[in-house]
Length: 135
Image (cartoon, rainbow, N blue to C red; front, side):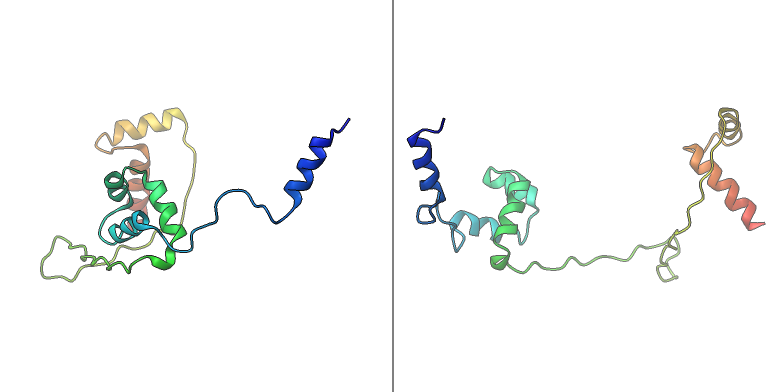
């Protein structure tokens, strides 16, 4: 059985004249502007710690006010220097091929015994394959 109060509540909620909650802000307030200005030179975690909020909340504020975000300066990356000072820095070759195979426990123990200096079985197997291919 539906009561009169329930029907009245449904009618009131369905009307568009009374919306719930406060209206969304059209411009960021002072605290949010300070957070957006701090983003220019600091990480989200540093800004969050300074303002007493989490870095995730800082990210949400930045996402909400993208249009007000100041332009960040680009980080200048230094080239990776190799051992020889006279040679220009070389770019690492992309490893795009994957080779996968399974070994028995006995084969893994043989790898460990033969190559004890390797940190893992993966490195030992890769070393064997690259030595074989370079012959």
